Image 1 (spheres, helix red, strand yellow):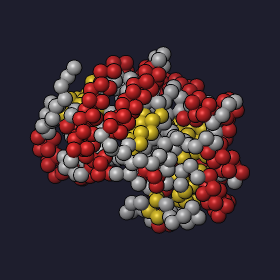
Image 2 (cartoon, protein in one colour; image 1 turned 90 degrees about the horizontal axis):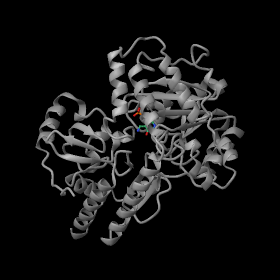
Image 3 (cartoon, helix red, strand yellow; image 1 turned 120 degrees about the vertical axis):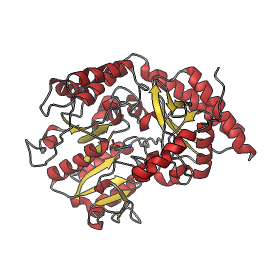
Image 4 (tube, helix red, strand yellow; image 1 turned 90 degrees about the vertical axis):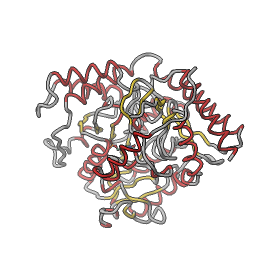
Length: 452
Ligand code: PMP
């Protein structure tokens, strides 16, 4: 078995210095900076293969970041790579429709039956942003309800934090968002049906849509409590509001489908699976990440009469020079084809169970409070004693302990996302030996945390 290493990352430090001169903050997405884990140079990666990537100093890491979700097959999966190469050789952009787009739309519809019609865009942000516009166009209403701690990309409307209670309007979470826009958003706590009902009572006839991550991936992996999504959908419908599921993370993450078609979820919420599916079917769904096979993509879709609001059929405008580009579509098709391999999701589930269980045992052995929220092949590690079922509970965890753990793991060749809120993602490329190495590293890290 490979030995655990302490890594020298001199070249990353050098590159970070250079990057700071030319790229704002040295990174092209703030979540890549190490700000939330004590600062300093992020690791500059230069190559990936399967479950590993290598930094510019030549250190190898077992990758649980999976690029924040998309790399579910591991890096440079041959089937996806071949599809991308083929697309590159035949022209990457035509500005015309292509046959592959139809094929891919069909694949998505087969996997997620609530998608009567889809539209491809270039990112999760774009997909979510457009679902809101379409919901507003369809209902003629302007406000949306979202849930505290759920992240839906960086468009104005969804970068809004909670006001002081479910009946208050939001405040901008970022500079540059007018208060008037934030006032179109109401933020309520996740897993709290009464708070949602209160908001609907207060703002009812103005609410175009209720937007949710049906299984949360952005403040740790958090399941909806049994019955919560059904109640949410029913309350929204009574109010004449649409339901939008942001499945940018959850799409194809737990099984070949989305959270809305996740049998485990339906079963957990008691019996009659097919009936439950229908009850929790959203009007609109946003997708991204995994469906691009590692290339930029987003997609949104849903009920036919709602989607028919979109130009050129309807009055809601949405367009894109790069939308449905042949390379992203080819990579997405190849990724989904590979995900159909029998047993693939079960393998990720089994490895994640062993890893999450082992982390819990090790932490307990060294007296470190740790709550692990696992859903199939994805889980989050919260340094706390209490369960994490909403954003308040996720915030009330020890960020310094996480930062410590993150760095100790990185020095031992295990790469996690540099934030206490992000998930660990298994890929189909991880092996049992990788899990063993990771558990060895974690044991060592917890021991060191316990000693000082
Ligand atoms: N929705 C969710 C649930 C996400 O997790 C993210 C990205 N982390 C987005 C939307 C935005 O996607 P993108 O980064 O592709 O714009």
